[in-house]
Amino acid sequence: MITCEGLVKIYKTDEIEVVALQGLNIQIDDGELMAIIGNSGSGKSTLLNILGGLDRPSAGAVKVGDWDLLKITDKQLVDYKRHTVGFIWQNNARNLVSYLTALENVEMPMMLSGNYDPAYAKQLLEWVGLGHRLNNKLQELSGGEQQRVAIAISLANRPRLLLADEPTGSVDTKTADMILSIFQRLNKELGVTIVIVTHDMSMAGKVGRVVAIRDGMTSSEFIARHPSSSAEEGTSTGLTSEAHEEYVVLDRAGRLQVPKAYLTALNIDGKATMEFDGETITIKAPRALPAEEEKAPFNSQTVGGKSK
Image (cartoon, rainbow, N blue to C red; front, side, top):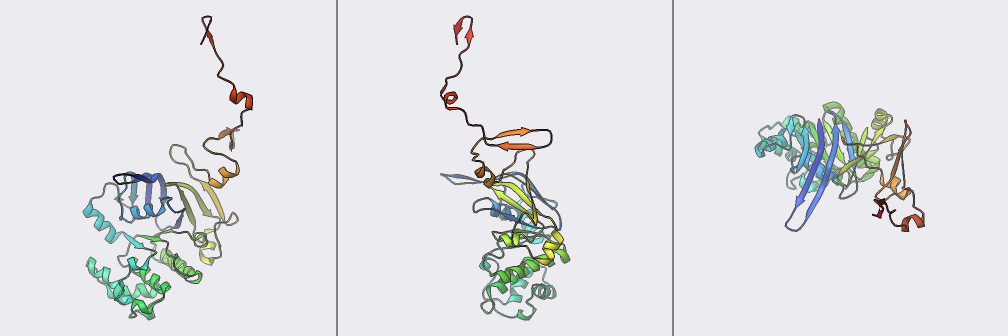
């Protein structure tokens, strides 16, 4: 469904240039429910904005289904956003119109796209557990209920891809679990591909695959050892070694990002030694030179009887 190879995004102003993505590689299968994690400034939201058609890539390759988002025209981009992708923001104000009812909020994008379907709008609200709140104004709904309305809106165009940026960032744990269960149901019953960007490790730990991004590149992946049970039971409390297998991601050139905690523990900064014994690759901190060797000048060579 999604393929990114060497994806680069550079933001430029008159005085500064910021490289948000530095050759990111990622592949997401059709019908997959997965999460992306990373510290602030790692590039995860930039990736989501590019996949959602909200931002343009600078270089590399990024394809969603049959769409090439690097070469897509402005007119095609409008069609892509209307028919292929749905987006959920953490800030409800970006999803909802305050003076409309829950049902009217879901119906509005249908009207604007010329695909008005009132029966489907009601069905979407029933899917997210708000069938009894169709005619309530937003001020009559809790924060968690408003976020569920936002999920219904994101599905109004029947997208193949659903992108969620911190969907549980402003709700309590109980509501977060409810939102995740909605995603799991939509993924299973509708087959929609769902990509969640989150800081919530408990939520990330309940999906089958988690990709970590660091410094604008994919650094590692966490694969659930028993993905079906963790998704259905929702028992995981985070990314644990018992529940998940961690993999370091290599790009086509063989480069990898070693987890920062490992480098810190080994006092590796800038350089490391690598050994291969035929079966295992070992990375070590470089050997410290003896004090006299560090201070000694380069050995001179004699050429033709003269020192050089």
